Image 1: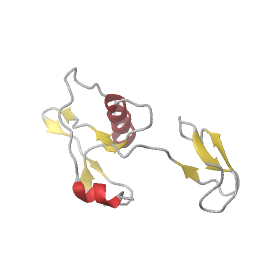
Image 2: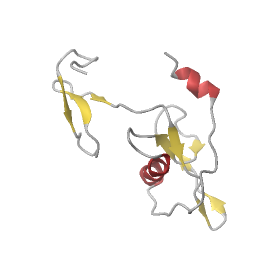
Image 3: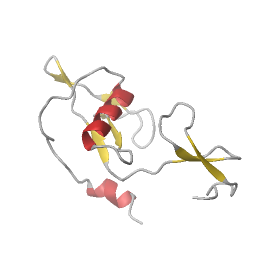
Image 4: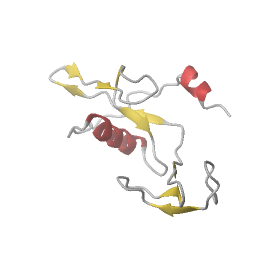
Length: 116
C-alpha cells in the first residue's frame, strides 16, 4: 500500500498509538489500515457456572449482548487471537482451558457482507 484510500496522501508503516501491531497509517489524515484475515475468534468464558457476555459498544449491533470476539490478526494463532480478543473485549484476566478447539462455525450472513 502506497497511498491512503481516504485522502490520497502517502502512507507509512508504524505502530499506531494504543496498538501493538505495525499498520499502514496515512501521513496526512491519520487513517489506519488493518490487514486482517476474515477469521473472527473468541471464547465462551465461564465463571461460577455462568457464561460471561459483553454488550457491544460499537456498530454493528451496538447495545446487543455477545461473546467476547473479534478479528484474528495476521500471523496469530486461533488460540492466541481468541485470548487477545477476550482480554480486549471483556477486560478480564483468565486462562484458556487445555482442551482442543471446541468449534469452528460459518455464519453465511456475516460472510456475505465481506464478499468482494
